[in-house]
Length: 267
Ligand code: HH2
Image: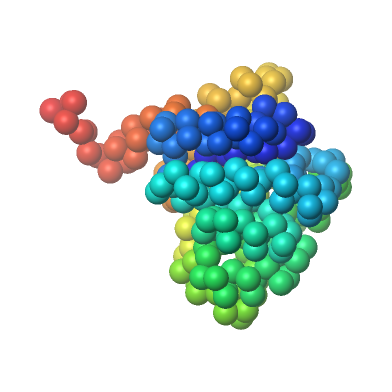
């Protein structure tokens, strides 16, 4: 899943693709690099981010989704917590709603997903973006995230969403310390055991910088790849990344190794 941030303030690429032409061009490049899904978002969820109005969010993402949808066979995902934005994006050609609040901020989102037959990704976050990194605490982060995701999956199904349409995400970096993120990755199998495809989003996140001696966003690709390979081995299915080409190569090699398929080149 390639990230298309149509925002001025995303933590690693804010302002680069705010213009619709630049965002579409970026999306097409990510597809060319091997992305199967493009995840377009018009509101940053970085720690401390200020909320964006619905009108502004629609203005940013809709032209991008409309134009990418005309392009052909890419699966388009809308990264939003707002019902109005999700509805407009699904009409414009998106088929997946990536809601980092897991339908908590707007419970009506579940009915929309049910009605349209879209897919959804439900992610764990502690509270909300403005405050989530203020001293996050858990007794057992993995059990608590797992219980949250099971409860949200139950809510989605009770609202009429086909269980097969639901993906789950432990929400790396969303109200978690470095130790919490590492524990979630180390014990990812426990989240996978819920039985739905698991999405992981470690790409360029700050814990990778901290673990590598204080690297800035642009230098966190090696850390991103390390976590994605590990997550693949522990059963993750979808990898949300900014740097598609490099992650695709790393995951292809890792996947071939895990299945002991040496591939044509090595025979
Ligand atoms: N992370 C971000 C945004 N959306 N969605 C899912 N499902 N999982 C994630 O881990 C996730 C997400 C944060 O990354 P980014 O979009 O690059 O930053 P920003 O929120 O600042 O735009």
